Length: 291
Image (cartoon, rainbow, N blue to C red; front, side, top):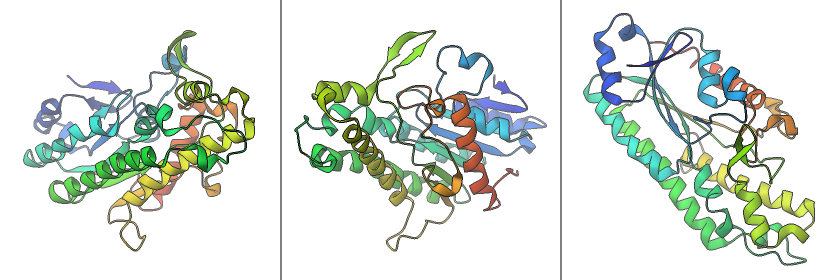
């Protein structure tokens, strides 16, 4: 059975989504998919999950007032290798004559964050931030992430040619020592903060640590953005990349209130972030979704 969120129907078992084609009125609603990591599935910090949207998916559904059939393939701690398992779903849905309209993808963050202890080198006094990141491990992370997005585009082009792929570039966090917790019980992280501590950055200037985090996030952002462009740097057909760090979006992500922990946004942060993303795809005529 599908889950309900406001007017929407959420399916996590692909056969249940396929069976929705037999039902009225669900078969007249548009079909969409979310794919990826905790930015699509974050359960919320402390009590936030009880009364607030705590991830991008919920914020998207709140902003789309008319009903949508959603296939939810987002879950916590997913790396691109986990998200890649769902590429076959594009083929399965096509065979069932389900035409997805939008695929919101949030993948690549954990390929960098979970590997932060290898991406960041031991602290050395006098070294610039660029010299404190491991070139070989950055290349490996880029290859994993860009390879996933390239295969995603290939599956889309072959099985769901009308599907719009909508990706994003994450944000560089303000803090690096706040773990994920529920009701003040730490359950994970801090990911970057732990890597910095492991490599002796307690003695490093705060400005250097901040620059190091920004460099890491920029590397990830550029990797995803370039996966959505051709050799001439132009966007691939039916793709939209959202860069939340662009000044045109007026996101105050440097405020601590924008963040729930080290790498996840607060309910306020996700609400502002997704509203800006939706404004971007509205300009392309992609919102609200149509059957």
